[in-house]
Image (cartoon, rainbow, N blue to C red; front, side):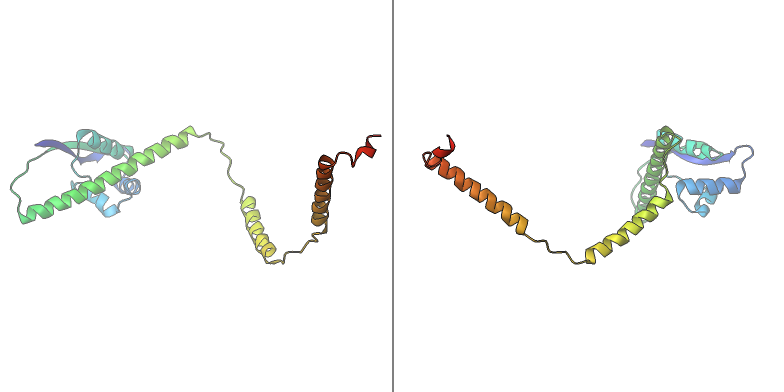
Length: 185
């Protein structure tokens, strides 16, 4: 037997209209407005969960001006019948969707924190730079279609020949030192 809590509707904060609260909550939860509107008729919006998680859900509701209360729910495991298995399956699906929703809420909170930490004067890319990139891309296509000009290999061959001649002269000077003795005088 575990004790879970469900967040239930308790009222609206001052100066908050129900239609605005429904729209804001639907956007935050990324849920249909009809499901959020059903919450105002005391139908559950979130699955039963631990107290800590339920408090986070209540905090989310309070951020859009909705007062809520925690309703304790104790889970007993009675004998399983066919209708109970479909109820359990539906409950597991609802719990999974609730987990995904709460994870998205945590991610959104972290992103908000990161945005607040960033300096207010961040550099925005100029739209002109994007245009230059597009024109560069078009020029690149044109350059790829132009034929490659053949260069003369004459310079390369002359350098290779000069290196070979110098290596031959060096080899001969080591092999026959007397041959190049006239240079010593």
